Amino acid sequence: MMDKDSKIYVTGHRGLVGSAIVRELQRKGYTNLVFRTHKELDLTRQADVEEFFASERPEYVFHAAGKVGGIAANQAALADFMYDNMMIAMNVMHSAMENGCRKLEFLGSSCIYPRMAPQPMKESYLLTGELEKTNEGYALAKISGLKYCEYLNRQYNTDFISLMPTNLYGPNDNYHPVHSHVLPALIRRFHEAKMNGDESVTCWGDGSALREFLYVDDLAELAVLLMNTYSGNETVNAGTGKELSIKELTKLVASIVGYEGRIEWDTSKPNGTPRKLLDVSKAASLGWRYKTELEDGIRMTYKDFLENPARTEER
Image (cartoon, rainbow, N blue to C red; front, side, top):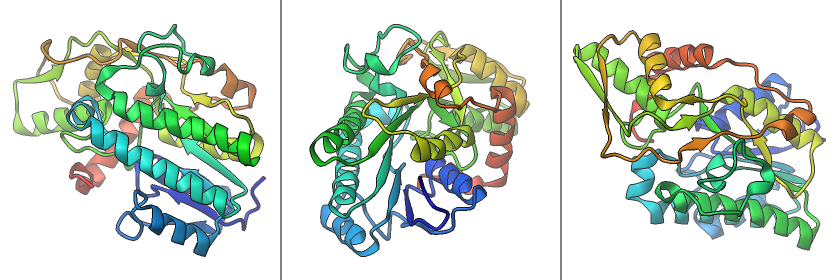
């Protein structure tokens, strides 16, 4: 269990997940937090990561850094998404192990599960079927990170765990027009359409895909809980257990943003995985449940978007 003055390193501390974990740690009174920006430490460079860990020797690591994006970004750069995320994960975890890190938590993604997995998806469904092609490179990197946690535990008796969240959203999200995920992309698109007086907005696919969304501060609460209470080789799912169609989501976002034009669909574009609902009974058994309902969370996220226009640019 972490002490209030334990040295804790949060990778990706300026991103959506990392910044939420930092907020939660500070809220709970942890005072000895270590950060490095991408400019200060490129996690894809093995020698630099080794030097950092040898110098700082953090006791606990929340590994939230990574290259992320929606369908368009993933499809356009499958190799980059696989390489960057694989290198980052291997470098951080190997150096943590080499330098006596007491515990590490690896943050993954629900895209690790098979495209046509039974729903809701249990942790045990990992590697039981074919992945979604549009983000296969990213998923393979995340699976490798999860399995590397397990293998380090088995071979070196480390205490490394993994947490697999569903689609996340909230403060400090990335609203870049190409590299963002679906919910922040819709917020930006509808906001700009409202500002421009556009009569219609065109969205990808046919809107039938079903998705689950978790407010990132709820995830951060679980991340800290697991670091203090959970050990095991099997990952832990994080979600709400609720889903809605992308078509329903677009209507909800448009309503919150205040866009009153038409919503049209480009069916030549992919839908992605038909359905991605996580079984969250394991997290519930560990004493966690989400708190933020989707409509409330989107309202808070839109407020953050309006207050932080710089986040619409690529970081």
